[in-house]
View 1 (cartoon, protein in one colour):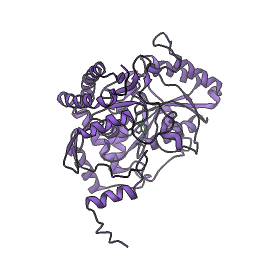
View 2: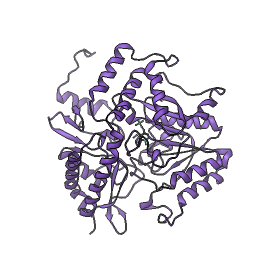
View 3: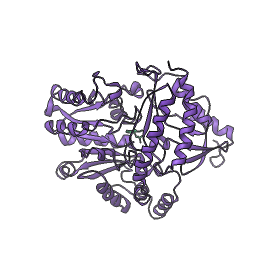
View 4: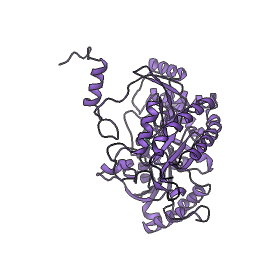
Length: 456
Ligand SMILES: Cc1ncc(COP(=O)(O)O)c(C=O)c1O
């Protein structure tokens, strides 16, 4: 056997391991190693070629507080010296403190958390809690959603090409349209539509067995990877009414939209609606360590004093991950990052609108906080997508990926490796005005790659 202390690690060796020994997420396996990152700081990262690059995606919308904040690194080191982890049936200080902080910052009486290791796990737990609490099986999910990569969460990610390989099924589910006003599936216009998308949910619940069979509805309050879809103001209040009518639980997946991304602590805060269960991950530790959180309202949590809570994991409430989350969440408050997200988000949206004026390939610009999407079209009038939105991820290049390639050549990363024709800009919440200008200028140039596909 190879000497494990002396693994060959030249650039060529590492490249070979990447190509031969790793399953890369959601992709055809590459024939060349992806760029290797050697360091990062604030809104920038450095690749092995020595080039400094601008992070306009916060690494899949997770590094909200920016890269390598020494305060979090120190908190992790301190906790590691004391206690990395212990069995979840024992308490540890960071877990208890984190649970209290989460109860404080989340809406309404959301108060009892199950702490896991990522967004997918958080959603799995949410669906299980929903089933156990209601005693019902069916869950409504929305097309153009992403809730994670495991059997249940992938099943609920209807209309995301990544669920093509999902053959196991999972929960019993029904899909409904999004409040996607740019491409309304009912062919209506807001506000004359009277929110047909909510009326539809009401009817689906009734036809699927009403309060006897329907357990919950899961949604991203502001849909992320599938299009930065921001619902109209009445959507969530009206959906709350429908859910209350049937006793259906609302599960808000705030994995991407949470922790200041939209200019509030949580996107649901924009509508003043309290979901029954909320899930979080990415921004909770900003990826310094993995975490997932499923938080439930008081009466739901209390139910499990009498009813067995049928869920768990060895690493649940991992002390090191919880310590990282506690310190990270304090930093949002300490550095007024939620406020900065709101302020800089408005600026970014304005600048993105200017891009629309210049580039025929942009059909729509939408966003909330530092979460702004550009939807690429072939024809602005007909809204024909710049490439067909295939159910299955197709190999090879497409106009959006050409833009992403140009961005990389110019030293910037935005969020383009998602389904559909949307390029999202979601920089860390510490971003400053001049850094936004820098990113928008790069985007301006890169979009020329897609303009050539647009009909003018
Ligand atoms: C809205 C949403 N939910 C769930 C997930 C899954 O989270 P994770 O990748 O941490 O498992 C993601 C990941 O991007 C997401 O965007």
